[in-house]
Image (cartoon, rainbow, N blue to C red; front, side, top):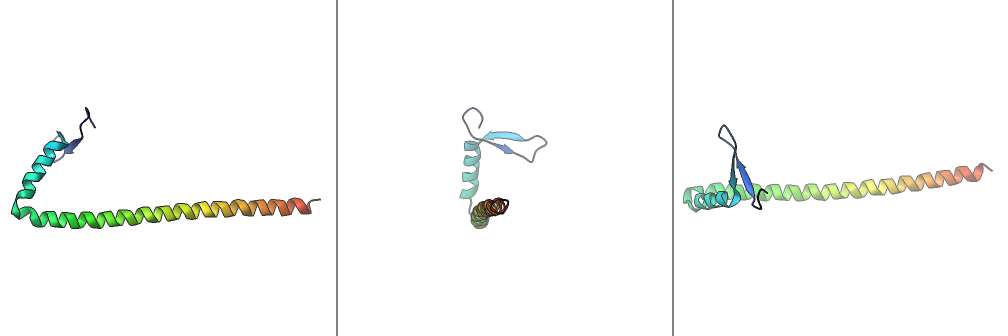
Length: 92
């Protein structure tokens, strides 16, 4: 955010051009109103939906992996406690 506004960088020219997001929104609305762009929009929406589903799945897998790591850490800690206790008990 620059100056309290959201800005979008537009590539494709020799130098990137920064435009306020609302200006890009107006241009996008204009393009989407054209009938010949409807199929493109539908494909974009389908792709976005697929990407969102994949992202949700990745986040779920990351959460499961984090829980598994925590459980392994807990079990390793418990294992060490039991081994040290047993070792100390026989060291008398």
